[in-house]
Image 1 (spheres, rainbow, N blue to C red):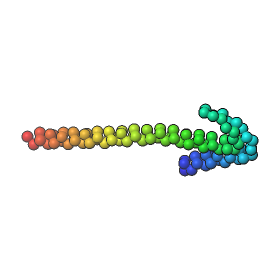
Image 2: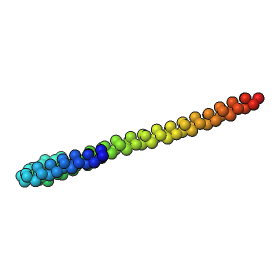
Image 3: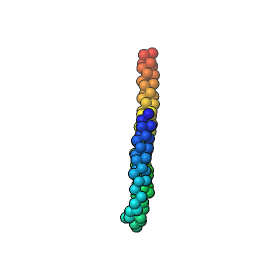
Image 4: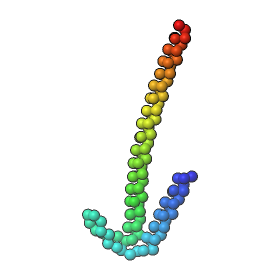
Length: 102
């Protein structure tokens, strides 16, 4: 449900940007880092929105990947510690049984 709402918000923003861009056929000069070009406002608006959207998803994806890797390492460590704890419990109960028999 959460992802559906996020998708709808992004879709509404995209539709609004395309609508605003379609009504503005004016050509503007866009001066970017290496050169400059003349683009219609609708093309410029749609392309900058797409670049920003993809860049945002890439950055969020990297953070998500980092958290997933950290979680995986933590789960492995917990499993290893539980295994060690189980071995020590087995050793303790075995030594207690041998002491009780004597």
